[in-house]
Image (cartoon, rainbow, N blue to C red; front, side, top):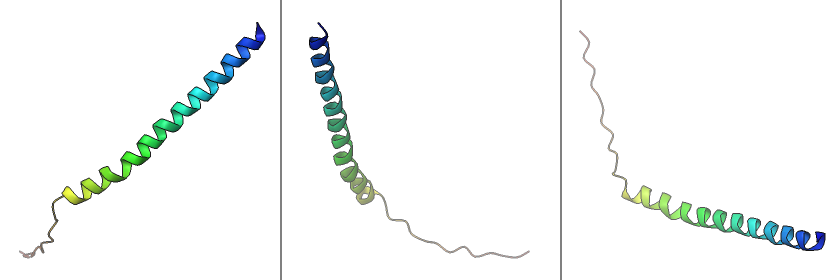
Length: 55
């Protein structure tokens, strides 16, 4: 039954691409808030000058 095999091939093809698109969408949507949270929760860095003493 080659016709049935072809139908299952098409169904599997679209299921795989749908799963890939869902995973990529989840990864892209989660990437932006996590980077914003990291920036907002990071401590402020203060610059200090170092005085050099020559011997």
